[in-house]
Length: 153
Image (cartoon, rainbow, N blue to C red; front, side, top):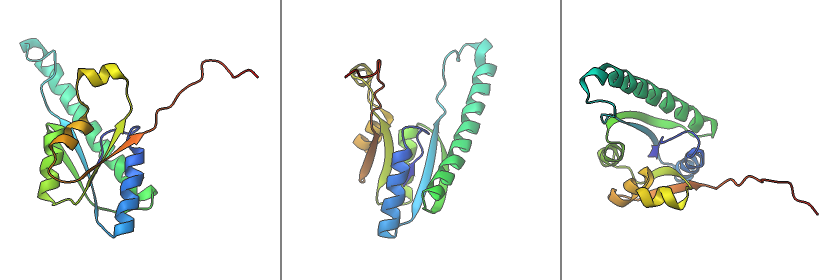
């Protein structure tokens, strides 16, 4: 099962999932989970409409991203047995779906971030990895270092 977490940080995860599914003759399932938790400025009574509109935008963006992921899997030479869109707490939904479909492996992408963000809390992939009751493969996107000045020799 491939978790469609984000476009940039998980392309390597999509490639790895396609390779694993093709190499083992397994079915590949793709899931996108969207958080429906209430965000600020709601619950203020005057901001409820704005919050509802933002939630609808998140849902539409989540569905569009899931379609993109299915396209990427096919572009990488794989085929998707099924795709799933879930709403709720993303880590909970991914873990629940993995149990429902009896996934043999959950493949998820992760990006390399600095020490400060790591100290503030665990990432989505770490949360799934820690709580899942089945194997999880976390594929990290390599850090890209930009040069500030050209090398002089």
